[in-house]
Length: 239
Image: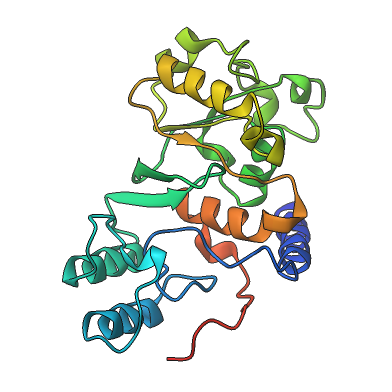
């Protein structure tokens, strides 16, 4: 219990530091209509004001990403708030919309920092495999994760057959830093996608401070650990 509280405290401090970055605009989840750090009733009010013409649409107001902003978007936001959404759409490191089925109950995490972020959010029970096996050498620090199978940590050395045999709901890749959007990163992503058909890929920058706060919050919504976040405001539009 004390270790869990310490990990959450450290994560809170990281989020606080990351929230000071001008590059961080909040939460990258469709449904976050007012572009703040949480999906709540304020987003429902905001979408209603878009529908009646009071507010201009924002990119994330189209909660179900069907090309129009209407009552179905409000229904999706209500489902996200209650935790009953069947799908969630988020923005990945490439700036693209990714749809993931909810809930995520089996997760392969090939990331370098991603595994530790998952543990810090109290979700290591979702993990069925990791990328690098270095944690196997530190069972005291990683009593659960050290026992998980390793499936490789890049698109080139990934054991795709093993990943598929684990039947994960999603795979978090090693594409978790800005190098991923440079030359070569997209090729890695395409290789993951070709070899893991039908499995949503989670590619979020959880290494670099400029976007860390937004991406950890986004990841929390994906794995249903959003309640672990402190609420840091970046002064969203006044309702």
